[in-house]
Image (cartoon, rainbow, N blue to C red):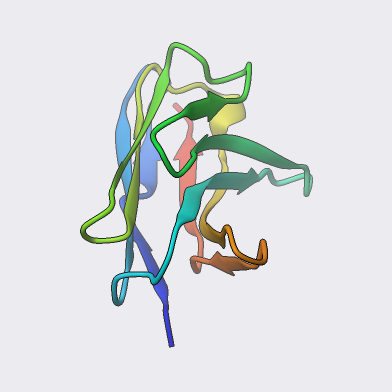
Length: 117
């Protein structure tokens, strides 16, 4: 029954910024990690950023210094603040929730980010 709803994608020019949001329909039970994958037009998939239960953050090298991931445990939500966007950031961004008990993933529906002049 838990569903992740994404928003915040869109079309921006290089150097622009976007903030992605992913919020669970209800608060998740038990400890869990949350983060973001992206799939580029050539079908490459990459872990962009994650925030481990407990507060540790991990980023792909390609986005370090430009993206910031944050989360709300109260809402079971995860956010991605993106600045200095580049055309190579163009992708569908998928948020996820990963339960620690069994490692099962729950995925958002995806939100399109397009960086183009």
